[in-house]
Image 1 (cartoon, rainbow, N blue to C red):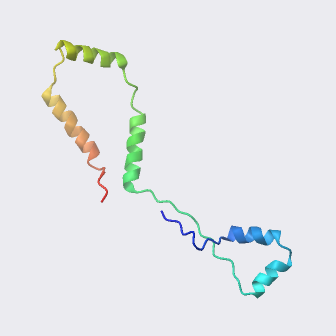
Image 2: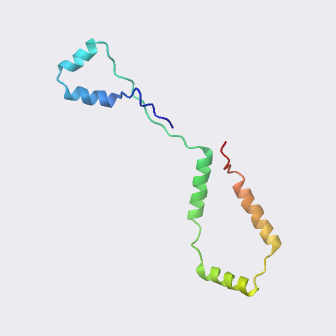
Image 3: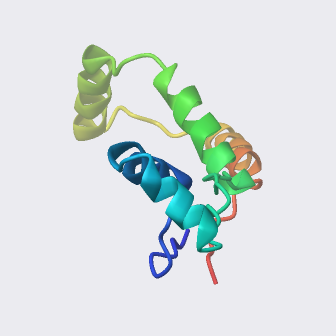
Length: 109
């Protein structure tokens, strides 16, 4: 978002200056033909990608903490050669992950 700072005259700045001046200053400004600049409001828009990322972050925050005992058991099973990978289950999990991520587009051109 770009902010134009070249012609930065806001109504609040004009109002503050007017309040400090004596009663004659506002009349002088009006007689000189000066008008207060229209009040500009700021706006923020969140892209759909940012909304999706926010939803993913919320989902991740709701996941349970890491079960360190389970991690240690898997590490031990791998190091002892007892850990077996079920290729069908792995493929199903990868496909599920891909489906979840298909709506997110991380490429910015």
